[in-house]
Image 1 (cartoon, rainbow, N blue to C red):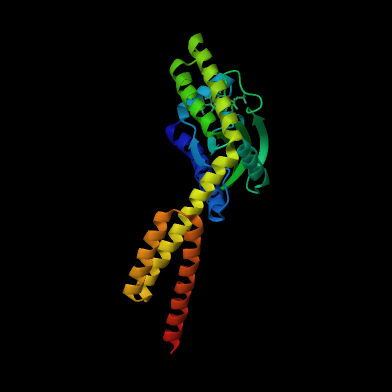
Image 2: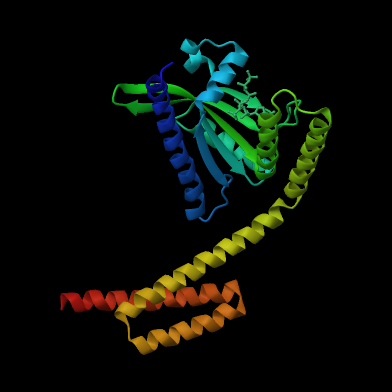
Length: 271
Ligand code: 0O2
């Protein structure tokens, strides 16, 4: 196939990857904005390299004219979770989406591959709009934990280095490492609630502090400078006490002061 033909063929896949990365990042941000825990920790995507498509097609005996119907992971999205439990939540999110039509699910979490690889794969149809009209194509979504991702990234690069000639000893060490990843994920799952509590309170604290700083910044524009300086000094003292309850109360008081100034400035403008 000529270079230009490859480009034409891959362009809609790039569009699909770009759109889905934006959409899944949006899912993650929506959870965070709603001050909820997001089962998605990281999102990435890629279009398979031409050399990799050709290599896979040869390996599977697929004719180049049938690439789009036979190679399911030309467009790939990877969703990384913190905990194994989050994977189920992400799968449910995908099953409920109206822009993705699931073709197939492959559960390599409960049935890991012989290599030690663990991940949950969803092959789905996704439609992009092009200047030639709508194009329905296949995307592969890989969902895995941070630990599984660490293992598969390393193993993938070793596979790339050795092809099918990976030394037995290395293969065994990788299997032992896969077992260790399994244990790590199980350990993390057992302290999940505690970790989530810690992360939630860190996030809550960061949100309250950012609200307070925003209010102080706005007050500088409408209130007496000496008064705002006083508020700021008080905030620094409270900040050092490191008590979320006190910070929240201070933030509420500041909301009231800011609201009073807002009402005052509206009244002044209609006088
Ligand atoms: P790349 O370079 O990541 O694109 P199937 O016919 O379903 O058995 P297929 O189509 O290869 O075979 O599907 P499978 O096995 O679900 O693999 C799809 C992708 O999952 C692979 O794409 C890898 O990204 C990943 N994967 C599968 N098995 C392994 C493994 O043992 N180790 C690692 N690190 N990743 C794996 P590609 O095209 O192989 O590679």
